Length: 379
Image (cartoon, rainbow, N blue to C red; front, side, top):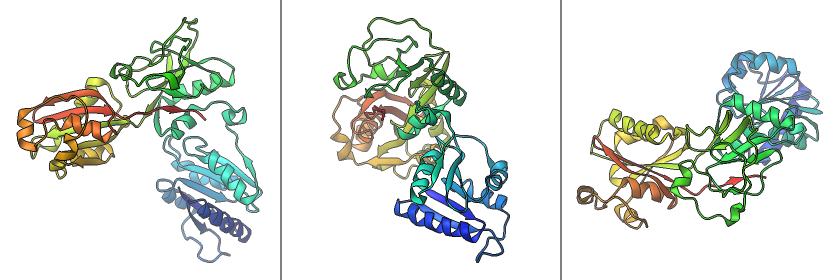
């Protein structure tokens, strides 16, 4: 975690230096700047300009001074709770630590508690779900390394839980431990169900499960009076509730093969067809995989850069060892030595995961999608 701090007085500098030492011991990167003509090495730009420089490159900003300074400084740069860094304010004496911005997704609340521990200060956290010890969907998404969509619905989920209302929960993936208080297990249609198996007793998911069917066995249906809910899914079309927050795990691999020198546009179009065909979220893909003969293929490298995910390759022998039944191609075997590149590489890269989408070929590009085993963890 990269943290940028700023202080405005000698006392604030002492607090900042103490905090930097504690944060570094905790494995974080912390850098303290000074803004005062009475402090050595004071920055020459305004505090607002400093905030503008640090906002896009820091995981957190900490102001050691008045809250008003922090608010005015960050105001021009605040955009979205999904992208804004954590912002904290500490009084110069280090008595109070305030979580000011991005408490959940940005990690400000968690950092506030850690900072207060280091300074032996009082943490000030004002988010309602934390105060009432209620489940927070954005915290759940962050801790499970998931993307989250429909933040308006996420607010409705929090409001419903705080009001003591039932909130639906549907998942395409197995769940470890019991659901948090207030969440009701539902099927893919948003209907509450009674579970007859625990997650530990369930068999491995089938490809049909991942396509939208609940891996749980339902008992008698309960009255459907749920207005909002959460869907853990990799599909854009998964909306079980009138207002659905989608939590998308990073668990899919795109396997690819292509004609040598296939143009960048052709590779991009093939990848987009994968998303459109199965209604996958792009954010669910953690990597692209192929044979090492394609490691310098510019079209795939460009796709990797555009999607911001790594491109990994395997040798012919590694792909041959992948267990399972794959769609064979005599032509591909003649060129690469392997009867199938896209399916085998996708499965291997996903730790021998499940093949969700078999080989699809068009215009010199082949694609396949596999999912590694992934489970929901509740603390």
